[in-house]
Image 1 (tube, rainbow, N blue to C red):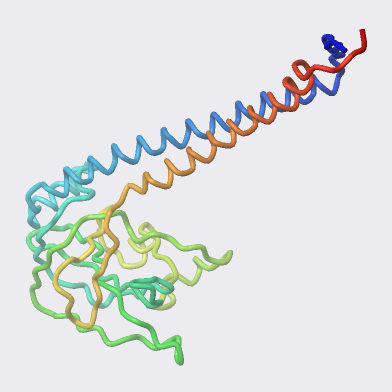
Image 2 (image 1 turned 45 degrees about the horizontal axis):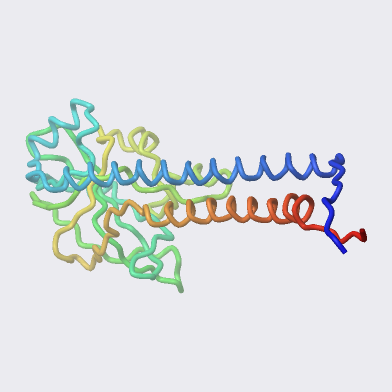
Length: 255
């Protein structure tokens, strides 16, 4: 017996599988490259944040001037502020976690000394009363001048809420979210576009274990590896089932 080349007929099924494999490989490879681009962007952002965090702290005057200028350089800076709490406008942001526990983030506007600027200060976290969900935890708010240290950040992150939930803003000191523009209109305060995470030693019953700024690039690299791995798997399966088994595997013929 001798081996003879196998005649292969390229039918429509072969071309359909080929087109699907090429499309799938192109899509997964593109998704892998996108994840690598995201990782690169996050690394650049993390580097910029790290550079700003090592700059000298801004005092109230410098911070007020930077905010008034509308510059984006006010974000991710350490600050040492002096001013007065606007205690009547304190709000408690609900369903916020710290160290794996549910509670409130206490937010109070701070009127900067010798400046028209008012900044929202995320003062810390307190546990909530689960037996009485309308009960506010006792939080001491000094009436006189206060000094605090912190780092600037974006306004408090919004959580998912039911449609129409924003209409309750302003009706209670307990809120799911805090819309900055709406809070400006509600309070009449000239609030800055940034907030401050207070980083002083824990006091007034407030916990201040804020999450550190992280790029999270390891997740993007992990996703990129998965997408490129899937792309390679599709290529291997295509080559084996559509090429090796179809064109190369010999068949035995009688002479």
